[in-house]
Length: 523
Image 1 (cartoon, rainbow, N blue to C red):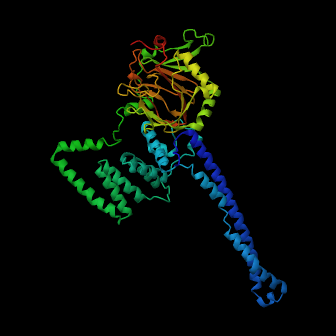
Image 2 (cartoon, rainbow, N blue to C red; image 1 turned 60 degrees about the horizontal axis):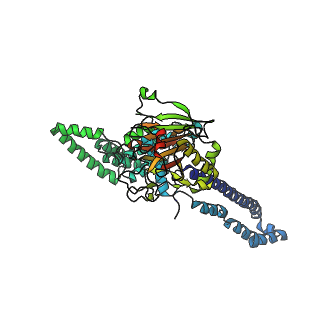
Image 3 (cartoon, rainbow, N blue to C red; image 1 turned 45 degrees about the vertical axis):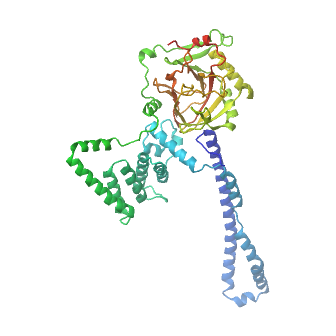
């Protein structure tokens, strides 16, 4: 079975270079075909001149024995050689290369996933379709934006993906954008205005807007008066609209209700009740930090009660949030260490999983879109050193912690709101590990992100932004062992760039609870 391609940047980079190699191979094939045609053309031109002269006086031409001999030779030998040249398939090398590389190509599911990622970014960061279509995204460089415009066909395909999911809100948005670009003079070899209007009329009808559905249908019929479905829809929409107006005249209350229904058209509600809050925080909106509370957050040099490793060279610690307490450590790992961690993880990156709350089994989920790999301390001295550093700084025993998890979020990559700890209704969440619940989380940012990619805490409305070489730390449990539900958090979608993180989940077993008070707030 062909492996699924995701928006993980490492694999996408490989695909980019694969395509570059294929373009080189394609150009080699074109040159070979051009050389072949040039040989045929030269031969044809030579014979054209010869036959023109010969046919003016055939008997005189053939009366010369050399000409007679060369005619026999050409017809018996040279035309056969020409036939072989014409039949030579110059595409063998290119087709062979393409066949080999095709096994690594994305499939229909991958393309659909990429389309959904674009729409996810559109919603989260409140981007209009024209902004996305022109490629002029917040945080993107002007050089990159010049190469990233969406064509009419691209917009149409995005609309079709939404339509196939019965997502008529996004269908309308992207079909309108495709129509706009057609109206502005852009051409398409695969889709026309009639087809787009057909999708538009149905998508707005499904959202309850009969008047616009009728408007799009009429415009379609102006272009194609014989369109069977549109003619049927025209009669149906006119009938329904007339019926609706009669009701509105008879009962003013129902008319008000109808207006309200049309005014609330838009994104449908989904499974995540805190969606709006989550997306606001991702945009940097709605963060609840008063000036008074802000004044109590400090930066300091921290040595964890004069730990031998940090007495002379303490680490830089910054308060990110007060309740629950979230701290950030600056310059905690070097660029060289981070590159080694990425290098070790890249060959093993797989679609990230979550622990099933019922069975405890690790499985993929649509709300966590990233690639991850696990690194044990024994695999490289750098991993062992980072583990030791986490233990020295936090004062927590990491021998019972999970391996270092490395994750890569490509464009659109995210992890929706979740808890790191196992809740009361998940008694078997970490039973297989036998190390108790996740007491604390250490999250290391191993890249800067041009736009998006924040870590947000939806319950307390906090946001922490990625900064390369820094790590944030918080406790998931109270000293009593009860879960701190204020730590519900999410990884916002990456809008531009890519996000590398590594995290260490520290477990209860092996901890001296009195040592937790050095960082844990008392409630």
